Image (tube, rainbow, N blue to C red; front, side, top):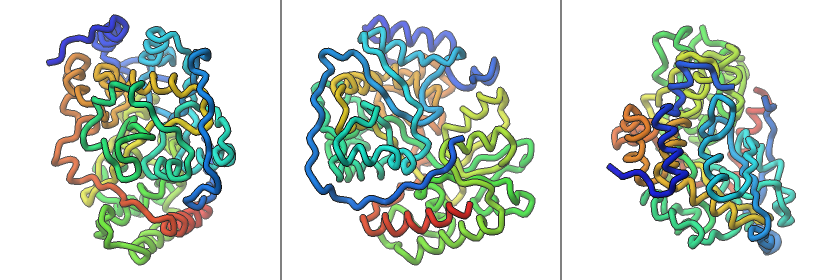
Length: 404
């Protein structure tokens, strides 16, 4: 077992987490912790019209930064503060604006793409986005190259994540969390649970089903049930269209009530939906918000999708070194474990599992945080799409969303 870290602030943070068991399970036993409309993002061609230059770094004189991220994605106390972030600010003297700005990849990109194309500041010094969107930003020249000397803890990055095809050597991105897309249901309304995506099409669920506005997750799960290996290269237009047709059928007949990004959680909490395609860690957050263990999550028997969200530094950020300090801090195993205990997503940091034993031993074998090989056999990466496929398939998917 790892000894406690030498840094006194991180030692204090770990001690606090250990004492309070800072997890969503704790929130469920106490007070509950505290919709964006769906927007459609235009597809951009992969290829910049000009070479962009990174903004001049002002980190030496400006002691602040803005971090844009998704909802339910950082440890949070009952008073709505973020303990690990507060510890970072105390340790470094930097002030961090934590901006919950990402509803889904496409809608966020739609808000900032014009500034990115001009190399301008987008109001975020680091933002966490999913692999395929990070690939787009890197290809278009919208990210700054990371200085690994400022991120020595990158040595703790899991070996399996060090060399993705979109960013070999991790020169432009560093993983934040990974997770699954699968099925969620209201246990009071559906005591028998869900096993397959097609269980969502049961007559008694008409008008009570939700789905994700992330194409690769919703369509990926449907394709998997249709027998397609979404990780392989053997499928194309025929297989994708078959899944789109299935989705469209259930939108048109009213089976699916809404297709959303993270705001799908509001529909589950309000009872507008009782079952949905969701992201794994969010279910604990939804339960925490309502103060009840009402919702369950499972990977479909035919498999779920596996993805990673990644830190990147936008081309127009003027606080690059400050952002790199933040990234480095969250790669401390003890800090990573504290976050994972709350968000219930897969941490990319080696040593976090050993650190978790000091915070909450019951989570050391939690398959949503530290999945074993058997669990990972049921999770599939959606293969990288060509530029032409991305534009074509996204257009088809957005066409269905217009009717949702």
